[in-house]
Structure formats: C-alpha cells, structure tokens
Amino acid sequence: MRELLDYLEQAVAEQASDLFIVAGGPVCEKVEGHLRPISGEKVFPAETERLIMGLYDMADRSMDAYRATGDDDFSFAVPGLARFRVNAYRQRGSLAAVVRLVAFDIPDYRALRIPEQVMDLADLAHGMVLVTGTAGSGKSTTQACIIDRINRTREAHIITLEDPIEYLHRDRRSIVSQREIAIDTTDYLSALRACLRQAPDVILLGEMRDHETIRTAMTAAETGHLLIATLHTNGAVNTIDRIIDAFPSTQQSQIRVQLSMVLRTVVSQRLLPDVDGELVPAYEIMHMNAAIRSMIRDCKSHQIDNVIAAGGGEGMKAMDQSILELYQAGTITRETALDYADHPEQMLRRMG
Image (cartoon, rainbow, N blue to C red; front, top):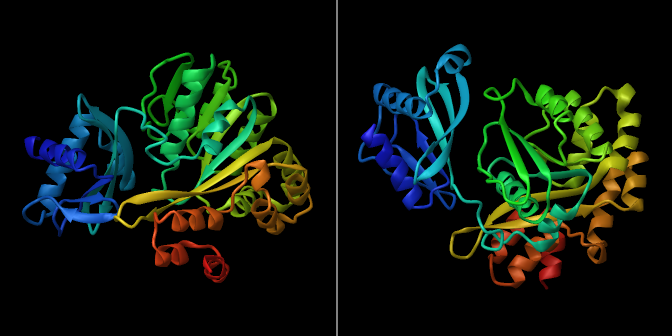
C-alpha cells in the first residue's frame, strides 16, 4: 500500500492528469499530454493486481463489478492529497487501471483560461446547456467551474448526477446534492426522473447516453430547470445531429422542434499544446437565436456553422476563430493551429 501511495503522491506533486498501471511496462503518469515512467522497473500481472487491489481497498469497494464484466469505474479520496477516479479493466488476461487525478478544490477558471462567455452561463435560469468535447478535453472541469459560480452567486438547489463524482462542492449560497451512479442511485435515467421530484433549480447530468435520458433531460429543461449536460461530440452541429439521431426516425421531427425550444447554448472545447508544451483550451460557443432554431427545425443544421462564425456580436465563437486568437497571441505555434483547425485551408489564409 505504501508503494501505491508513493505513486499517487508523486503524480499529484508533478501535476499529472492520469496514472497508468498496465502489465508489461512501468507505472506511468501523463503530464501535459506526455507519458513519463515513475516506477523503476516494469510491472507484471501479479504486481499490477496487487496495486489495483490496493486502489479497491482505498475506495473500500468490492471487486464484484470488475469480476462480472471486466470493467469498473469508481472514485475515492486520500485526505490531504487529492481525489482519484479509477477505471479498472482487463487486458491480455491481466488487471489494469487508469487513475484520473482530481484536485479537492475547484480550480480557478481564470487560470484554466475558461472565457467569461462560458462562465456567464451560470446566470441562466432555465433551459439546456451542453458542454461537449472528446474524452479528456476538460468538460468536467468546465462544468465544475460553472456549478461553483452558481453555488457562490445564487440561492439554488443544485443536483449533480455523475459517474463517478469528480469535484466535491461545499454548500455556499446554494445547497448542492451530489449523486454518484451505481452508489447513490441505479442509473442516469432513474436518477434524473427522481431528481425532478427533489425541487431542483439546477441539474448537472454527467452524460446523456440514450434517447430516454435525452428525452427526460429535455423535459426537465422545458419545465423551468437549468440542465447542464455532457456529450462526447465535437462542435455544435455534431452535437445537435447526435441528439436527433439517437431517436427513431418516426420521432425525429418532434425532437427537432423540442430541442429548438429548450436548447440555450452548446460549448465545445478541445485542448491544444502551447509553445511551452502545456495544454490550453480552445472553445466553440453557440447561443441559440431565431436563425439557429429555424435551422434545427428545418433539418438545416449544416448551416449553423455559418451563423456561429458571424455571431460574434451575440457572444458566439467558431472553433477556428478561437484557435486563430491563440495563434495571434503567440500561445500556440502555426503548426498546432493548422493541425487542430476544422478548416486548415481557411486558417492558412486568415494567418496571412
């Protein structure tokens, strides 16, 4: 156990994002997107099993779920150190794990370069806000900062449904109820249905995984709640299409109308390496207006990107515009800007 704690302490001290315990190689940490070995030698199946059983002991959790399916998600905290989110899985017949590190304190959004246009979403009273991006793009951290802003500025009942809980929110001006899937409740859908009877003002939904959860989330947003949810999509257009495509074709027309009415904002983010090798965020921000509502209803979502690009006066921003601004500020290199741009040819012309 001491050896495992040493690994966790070193990862926290070196501000790693993840710790990897996989048989056949050394225990590694990921720092600013780069893998670094932190064990002196390779670890083999017996040792990885011992280390990962130690993680289960720290979490006071049974390994039944892992034994039944070969996969398991859970989280635990080490007092005075950090909170850890674990995904244990079977690979090549041996036990492996990826441990995500989460600081106890909600990070300062300014240090993370989260723009004020995103933080201002905390002022919304109702409707659906979607925070999207690939795995590891910082969606959970952005959501946590928005929830923290609400917690500090409004008297509200905030209910979070997470799998697992990452950031712990202490009650400030609001009451924050945090429910972890599989520990505090069965699944997202039943938790979401139940929370509508728990007098929420704000609902944080960790993920919308199926059309029933999406439908219930839209109903919650429709009935006067602010619902903030996550999707693993890139960009507002892909997000809207993913939601609609989750439903049978016979229901999609109705869903388009409902989504056009309840959706307020889509924030899509990705992390780019800066000139010092650290990661910085770029954002696409789409706010609903009459033109976008009409495009969603009329199956013309492919035209939304043009509205976003022209919507700076309404607080919107295209992903390529955000990337261009990072390049012009000297934060990222020309090569990085072109690599991550949605439209590299246009980006090259705009660079002059």
